[in-house]
Image (cartoon, rainbow, N blue to C red; front, side, top):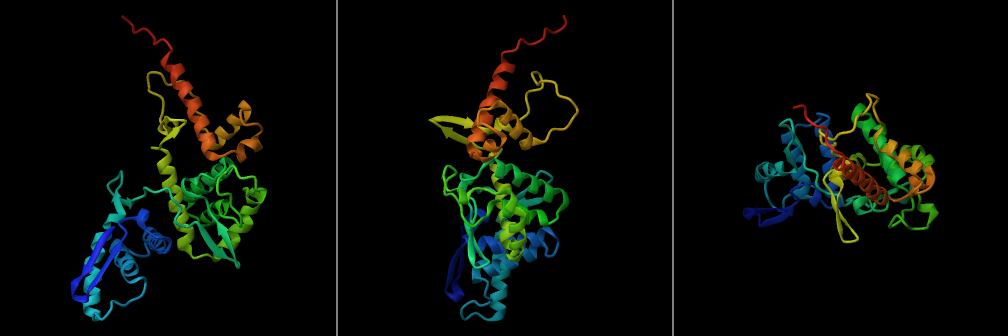
Amino acid sequence: MHLIEIPADNFKTYIPEDLSECNPEQYINICSLLYELKMGVIDQETFQIQATKFLVLGGKEKVREATEEIKYSNIYKIASVLSSFFEEGENGNLVIKQYYIHNPIEKIRGNFQYYYGPADDFNNVSYGEYVDALSHLYDYIETEDTEFLYLLFATFYRRKRKKRHYSKDKRAAYNQEEVVVLAKKFKRQYFGVIYGFFLLFTSFNKYLQTAKIYVQGQEIDLTILYKDFPADVKPKESDVPGIGMKSLLYTIAESGVFGTLEKVRTTSLWEILIRLYDIRKRDYDALANQPKPQENA
């Protein structure tokens, strides 16, 4: 957290350093500004000033008994610290700092009822739900059509939600057929909610590529699911492109470990990830034990 003090106004408060420290209201409103920044509606400086106004003043343009001149002078100075919401990307450009997997938007209100999203760490999400969501994510990244953001949101938010995946409440289960209908309803939502969830989902996927978890006391490094095999032992592949997680869905169903395709879809995402880790590790072990070809003398 950043400590903000304005002695002349007897003002002291804390504001978040990045999205991971935002409370739900802050998160939703800052994400709305981040979308405007992404679309070029506002520039970096304007984002930081507008975000500062909301975080420091609670969205209301008043600072106790300070004059307009003092108020905006202080806002401008404070705004510089909000560069902490960004970091340098691979190409040297600024990107949003995303290192969180807790859900700041646990529930929303719409159509006179609440809709509940995934739990922290996505531990109440099924594999089918996750695979469908990835399709919407990639479609949005490819087209920037916000229709896919609403579909992504509707994939995860519903009127009932299991607190953990193994709940037997069928009413809370993922229903693929309801997604389009819900996506239309969610178009009435404040867009900061929709874009905020997109940022959470991308942050979660970023986490999975570096995650190390413990299963029965053993550390499991999920990074091997996203790494390529070493060049000297890499198996030959055709030039035909694969279909990512959806392909793995069919492969696991064919193995019969979790049952039919539909049962694989309803299995916990984390159970499937652990199974994929096991399969990948066996592949690495098998390749490591293969005799290396003799080099020509």
